[in-house]
Structures are given as structure tokens and as C-alpha cells.
Length: 262
Ligand code: KIV
Ligand code: NA
Image (cartoon, rainbow, N blue to C red; front, side, top):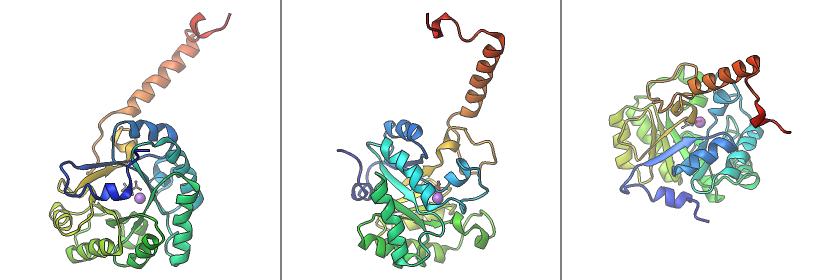
């Protein structure tokens, strides 16, 4: 009953505290993250890599996003839940975009969608907003365009970034992610747009920050970008626990009478 809404999320712009967003991809993690009092939980298409083991975010399907959004939506009671529209679910015309984004609102308990783009996606953002679907935009490094961008790099084209951010704002996005943008440009965008900027690799002056939960927990074994900070080392905790279990099974130390039935 007191779950954060997109309008209340947007109204945090210029408030007295920064906005915290984290990804989650399943029920257990979403419940834990939600209980910590973050404002936003993102079912990111990063699940393509983090959960599914793909090389980039391109392979994950609409049905798979719905599957994970269902789990997260059932877990979250407090935060706003935003779901990434996967590639190319919003590139096939506005009707298809509304159809796909509409599925998220119809088939899961999540409340908003995110899509990558500004200027080129302005018409799509406007169409979704007109259909009553809250849209978070994503400008700067757009991982779904990795092949066109030629890799994951810091985006420094100030004019382009400003144009994208302002196009997203004018199209009706309630917030936007800024990914891999120099601090000074992120500051300028944050000052110029009336909706919250949520940074990832965009410096400290955005209205909020987002990271991939597996990175925050130290669960990512592969290369981590410069903008990541791990607040725990769960990989080691898991390795230690599993190794201890294996050792006790091998030696016969587990189970004892305590874990057994008479
Ligand atoms: O897919 C994702 O996890 C994202 C965030 C990191 C912004 O888009
Ligand atoms: Na994403």
C-alpha cells in the first residue's frame, strides 16, 4: 500500500537525499534489497550476463525479462520496480513497443520500464507515456548498442548527451540513467533536466546512483568496470560455505543427530 510510485520517485529530484537504485533478478535477492529501503529496484537486462552467462545484454528475450520481472515484482513491497525493455523490443514501431511494455505492467507487478536512448527514442518514450506506462530513459553508454559504439567506453560527446537527456525529459520520461559519462557533463545534465538523473559511472553529482547488485555484493567473478564498488565479498563467503559443507559430507561430520529424525 505504501509502495513508491513513479511520480514520487520523480519528485525526489532536488530533495534532501540522493536516490538509491540496485538491480535484482529474483525473489530472494529482491526481498533482501527491498528490505534495506532503496528507492528503486531495476530488473536490468544485465541479467543476460549476470544470470544467463551471455557476453552482452543483446540475447535476453522479452519472455525472459517477463519471467524475472514476475519474481521481483512478487517480492517487492516498498521500492519502485523498473524493468528493462530488451533489445529490440522497442525498435519495431510504437505499437510493438506499447505491446511489449504493456506486457510488463499486465503480467508482472512491476510499475515502470526502462529503455536505452534519447533523441532517437523520443517518439517511443512519448507513446509509452501516453499509454500510461512510466518510462525511465538510459543515455550515455547504451550497452544494447555495443556493436555500434565499438565497445564499452566513456561517452564524451557533450552536445549529443545533452540532446539525448533533454529529448528524454521532453518526451515524458520520469527519470533517466546516465551511464559512463564524465562527472562535469553529468553535473550539467543533472542541473538542466527536471527529472532525476541516476548515475552509473557518471560521478557523484547525479540525483541518484545505480549499480548491479552482484557487483555490490562481490559476486561477480569476471572483470569489473572502474565505476563498480564491492561492499561485500560474497564470492568468498559462498566458496567457504560450500567447501565446508563438502568437507563435512566427505568426513561424515554432517549430518549429526541434530539434523536427523529418530
Ligand atoms: O541492465 C542494467 O543492469 C542496467 C543498469 C546497470 C543501469 O541497465
Ligand atoms: Na540495462
